[in-house]
Length: 541
Image (tube, rainbow, N blue to C red; front, top):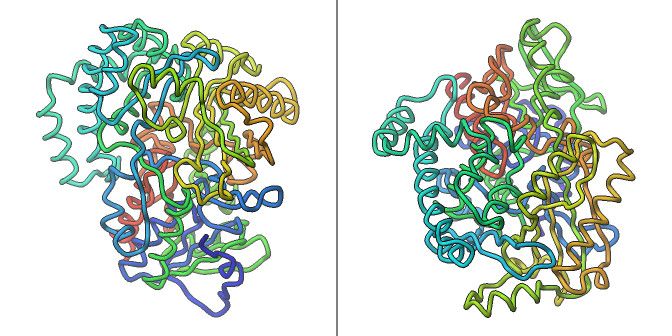
C-alpha cells in the first residue's frame, strides 16, 4: 500500500501557491497534475486523512485491517476513453496498472435461478449468449449496439472540452462523427427522448435481457421521457471495455499523487475547508476549519460537490442573486433514488457455484468470480423504483456484486476474499429512520448474496455498509449523492451543475469548479478534472 500518512503533517507555513485544488478525489488530483505539469505551483487540500475520494482504497480497520476495500467505486468506467493516462504518463512513468474485465457484467435470471448471460466487450459474443433466451433479442442487441456506439462517437469529442465554449477541434471531430453516422441519428434521438422502460420494452422480449438493461442503470424514473439516454453507458462497455486497477481503485489516486509530486505539487490531507477567502470580489484562498488561511495568487479549483461550494463555502453576497437562487436548486435528492454500498471481509473464498455449473453446461466457462453479477427481474426493477419514491425499501433489491479479490488477491490475506456490492435502487428519503433502513437493506442484500455465493454468511468477519447519510459524511457529498448532481439529461452539458456555471470558470474571479458534478459526468474518468485544469491554464496562467 502507498503510505499517505506523511501528508497529514505537510507544513504550509510561509509557502505561497499559484493555485489551490480543493478536494483530492481523482478529478481534483487530475486537475492538480495538469496544473503542476504546466509549471504552476499547486497545493491540493483534502478533508479526509487519505486522498482518493470515491476512488479511495483503504484497510477495513479496525475490524479486518488486512482486508483492503474499495470504499466506493471499482470500475474505471470511462477512464480508458480519455487521453489522461498517456498525457500524464501514469502507466509508463508512475506505476498505474489496469486490466480489462471481460465479461464485465453477468445478468442472473434471479438469485435462485441458474440461468444467466454475460455482457462482453464484443457485442457479438453477448448476442450469442442472448440467443439462448431469444434469437430476436440477440439480433436487436447487435442493432442497438451499433446505435449507441454511434452516439458515443458523436458525443465523445465534446466530453473533452467545455460544454459552453467547445474547442474548434472538438466541434469538427463531433461533426465528422455525426456525418459518418447519419443513418443512426434518428434511432439516437429516439433513444434519448424515450423512457428507459419504453425503450427496453420496444426492443427486447426476454425478461432477463430487459432486466440487464435496467438494474445497473437507475439514473432516473424508468418511465419518464429522456431516461432512455442511460443506455448509452453500454457504449463504454462495448468500445474500449471496462477495466479495474491493480491494487484497488485507490491505485489511480496513488499514481496521480506520484505524478503531482514529480512536477513539484504538494498535498495536504486531513484538512477540511471551512470557507473560501475573497478579496475585492475574487477568490484568493481558503480558510481551514482549524482557522489556518492559505492563499493562492491565481485562484482555487474546487473538486467536490458544487452545491456545497456555491451554497456553503462562499462569502455572502458574492454570487449574483440569480445565480445564488439557481445554486440552491441544484438537484441532489429529487429522483427518490439513493445509493447503497456494502463491503464484507471474509475468512475464506466464495463463488457462485450453482451458476458456474449451469454456464459450464452451456460451454460458457469464464471465471464468474471476476465480473459483477447482477440480479432482479425486469418487473422487480420497476417495482423497486415505485417503492423507493414511496420511501419504502424494495422487496427485491437489485444491484451489482463482485468478489474484488478475484481481480487482486493481495487485497486480503491469502485464501480470503472481500465481497463488494452496490445498488442505486434504495429510497433516498425513507419513511423510517436511516438506522432501521440501513439494517433492512443490508439484511436483504446479504440474504440474496448467500443464495448466490455459498458460505458467505459463515465466512463473514466484518461488514461495512454505506447508506446515503454515510456517503455524505465520508465523501462530503450533499444528500449522499454519488453523482453530486442528479443525472437528469438536462443536467449534462451546459446544464451541469447548472446553467451559467458549466464552463468550469465561474462568474466569480478566481473560482473554478470541477469534480463529478461538472461536465461531462460522474464516474471514474478524470475528464472533469482535465477539462477544468486546461480551462484554468488558458485563462489564468
